[in-house]
Length: 215
Image 1 (cartoon, rainbow, N blue to C red):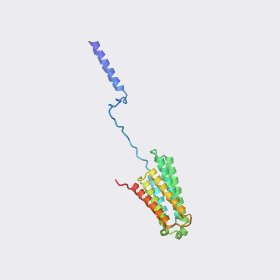
Image 2 (tube, one colour):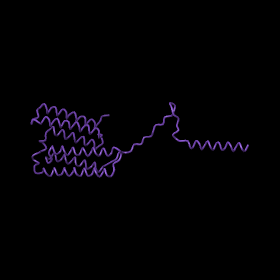
Image 3 (tube, rainbow, N blue to C red):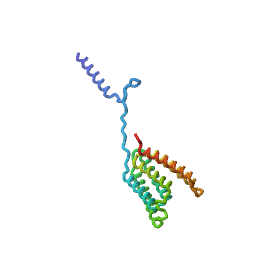
Image 4 (cartoon, helix red, strand yellow):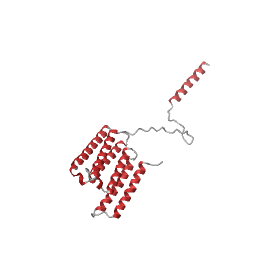
């Protein structure tokens, strides 16, 4: 009798040990297996507030220089494009969910260099500011710059993804190229102006639709 009780006790102990050691992944398989939805943990996007503030300040200085006539439209176009390139680089750095100290340092250096270029352009044009009064800037150029600014604002506020911003910037560049082709003969006809305004109007509407989607 004692031998039977001892045997039963040993079997129970072995069974309990076997169940405890069973791997957790050994779940029933097949069409009747229970559903266990995986738990997804989303890591917060890396933040770069100092770099974002520097970008905002540089964009504002370009706008001020353009409106005051101390930055020419062609200079502003180049500076805005450089700003967009830095924003695209920042987005690429953030794509893996983190920004390394080396990447932050590179972005700060890029922004410092761009800021210096903006200030140099403003200083160089102080004596000829009257030659580029803000109110004489063409309506088409004004539309182009306003659209580019809105794209930049959308990226900084995270209301535009890098992919969306890149597509919109490519369309804006296409319109600029078309304008340059129209102007190559030294004149912009009324029909060409209407075409450019229509293209820019459609692009502006798309930018606003993506930045401010209606639910």
